[in-house]
Length: 307
Image (cartoon, rainbow, N blue to C red; front, side):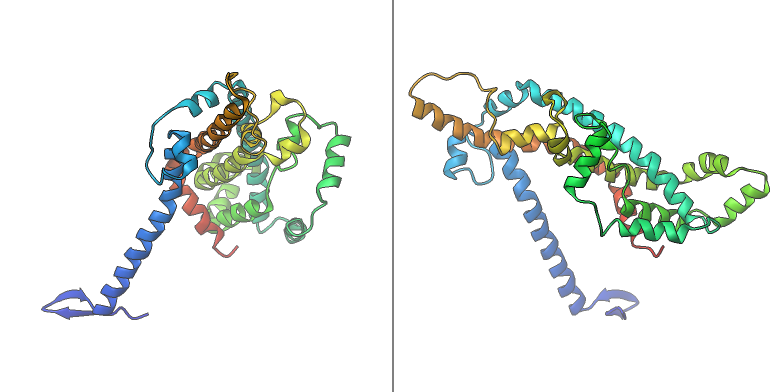
């Protein structure tokens, strides 16, 4: 594509078409920014606003009648704190298992001398389109004795074929083959080369995979809903589901007065609590993501390369 620029006195200036294009690019970016920020600002404002203004629609963007009653009930709920600890444990353990499985498998499939790698790759790709289904998976979990245990949450999803393909592409396109050949000539074993040479050079893709798997574990709730019965083992997302969907308000203090008024006040406060739990659930990811953004973008670029 030829750049539409012209020179005046040795100075390169944009043509009118370039300026119009740049103008519309900025307009589009500003609109995208507004569309992205408005829901976030609204949720934050609604979580600290008076329920009367929120439910009546008088609060449009910025908070009105600031109150932290919703957060007091949220953080006073012991189930939420227990769910936080459970989710952190599941996320750390699950991500560790994911990396332990994904990285070695992807590296093995990236080696040109690995016999049968085309068969194994094809076999794994088939699982992306064909699955056993929920009922057979549930029966498998029960027969293996993993029902109502942490292993039911972290072992069935020990890896992802999509992430294996991305990681394999990274190894093929980034790690110089000459480096591996030089290590082999020097008498380096495959295991030692993987631990001492490949892994230190693979920290970007390891960070990307940790982000992918970590976010997945943090947001996961369906597996816990199916496989867990012990409430003390519920992750945060399952606790928040009860508050958002089932409106589990048993942690609210007893109220006196007319029953209709009490129920009306509870319903109004429930709306504010729903916004509050959205902030509670997403805040850790929002805080961590900016520090890993460059690795996230790099992972997307690696996945777009031909492997």
